[in-house]
Image 1 (cartoon, rainbow, N blue to C red):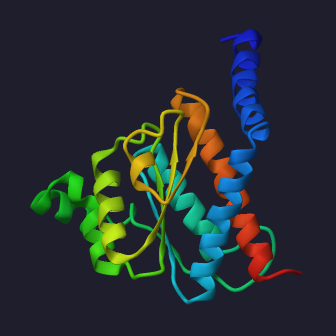
Image 2 (cartoon, helix red, strand yellow; image 1 turned 180 degrees about the horizontal axis):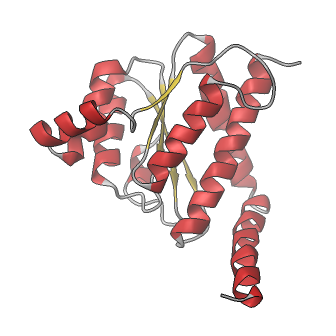
Length: 193
């Protein structure tokens, strides 16, 4: 590794974020996503996060920002990552298959008016697709965070934020950026200092 390689990776990340900054639709989708989350939380509903692999880690990260705190002290907010309970995950995968991993949990804990924030760099993860379908049956607002194509979930979600990249690390970096912005908007909207 050398400094040119490091510089290239930083520049690639900046390029994706610059494209987001120049896209007015991104601003609209972030605002609308945050609005839906605020509405759910004001109505004693919850935010459900789901993802696979690095996106599962991002789902857990964002749920933690809401349950604990983000920018300032305030009461905890109702959020859960359905990527964390190994007993539930392995029992569902064993009995129903990996594709039903999120759908079964949403069936169990999802309520009308909740928000599902589903992270998938490809937009084609079968278990995310099934989770979104189950959420729609229940009356849950669905928000997707994907890569540039949006994949199949872009056609299923109420809102879909497509990151202008096909490079998984750059997509995930932008997902966390957007997730942090949404968390900040939620926190400031519900508990202004």
